[in-house]
Length: 283
Image (cartoon, rainbow, N blue to C red; front, side):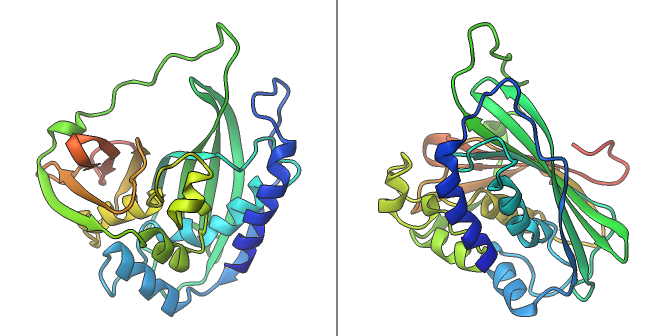
């Protein structure tokens, strides 16, 4: 958590000197790694509780992302990273577990930047996270982070294909999210981005109130999908921020393959899809 806080400070200092949309921008070629280390039980227990996962069982499918996030931030706030970290928006995540990860296994973590792509609202970078046990790749993820800026005329990519009709998924649960959820999840995850902590700090970045962490929303939905011995891959897209406090609706199809998080007046905050073995490729 200390290294993550240091990265946030470094990002605030270096962001004004970076500009998205440079035609010759290049990503750092190396990767950042963390040697194998056991999972600390107390932070894991706190994470399970705030996200709604079972108190015991395999490592929650989203937790390696949390463990590796300090590496991600260190890379994205480094000199070689071309985009300003302030204002980056987490737009989507794909998670692929290759086998069940036990909580007593020591995880080696690695993070690297894969590619820069044009987005209709700016430039998007794809970050890759990998977790290994004794050299075996057991878990990996890809995440998209958007740096918003104007694109030159004629260079705006078309909008992405429409997502599944999240508005039509049947409601399964209603959650009341407290105003301090961002501070509580930040204490557990180490992600103390000011937009999540307090209305005053959120307003500095254009939000009327603090917003929930996107990774909390996807983790809470996947906790509702349920943990089992059966592996599943997931893709989630973050559509709109959840302003805190809030009342949100978790919706899912009867088979539990598609899910969404909806807010007031049906506004869609998150859409996701789960792929289980035998159902096809990773979403």
